[in-house]
Image 1 (cartoon, rainbow, N blue to C red):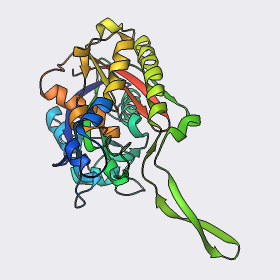
Image 2 (cartoon, rainbow, N blue to C red):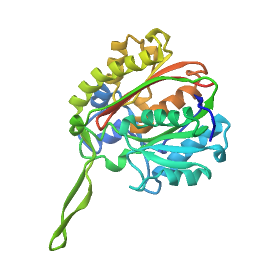
Image 3 (cartoon, helix red, strand yellow):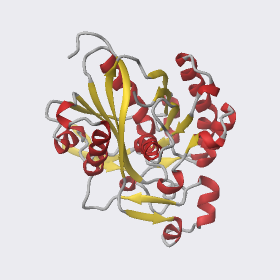
Length: 332
């Protein structure tokens, strides 16, 4: 534990995705759809799905290992492992499993459940631990296996989701490179996007019934989610930019949750950010929930688009409903 509060730097990224790829054409063999129908409405061309033999901890740990290697940090140096996920291998949480896989023996580990906003909530949470001097090095992982909870007979939802993981390493630094953020929730809109528990009464005693069941597949009102995102996301990005004292013109990259290309285009248009500054890998991965932002970020870093010193305006949005934005400078 550090005696003094510190700034925050994001210093290494990594990602992982399953080997199995389902194209739009593959899905047309499963449900009544087509490549043209899916691409024109979502921008998605394919998605990765995890095999039954693997778990969330496997791809989460692999993304974490790659982020640690990129940062030049050993797992034993990590003080905190944060796992943003809504699809853990264990309902009690998978962060400790990932910590064990990584060998991060000195770290405390816990899950954050905020669906598609989970990575940004985790980013802000990690920053608070570092800024207060409680911890110096944090591994933040966003990972989801939504193929487990997708109704593959529902063409409105099964075309959208994929599996993946992404991670970043955050460290204490002389300057604070998390420049500004804003987080919001509105539970009155929860019904627009849910993965609900469904149980039936189970009598365990003449005076006591309990529910026994499981979780239903993902349910979504796509039209309402689109309206919500197109309106609220630009607003929250503007608020984060205001907190950061950054203008839109100073932003090098707009990095949004990869939900739908129409949403990405609408938000960029409203913010007057040109398309060449918008990071999108939606066509290759679909909506990977908490993994989508760090997965897209890692690709953009590794192919040389995002460079040290670049300013990234990011926003996550989804189930809860929750949404948020963070503005950060990449690297040291």
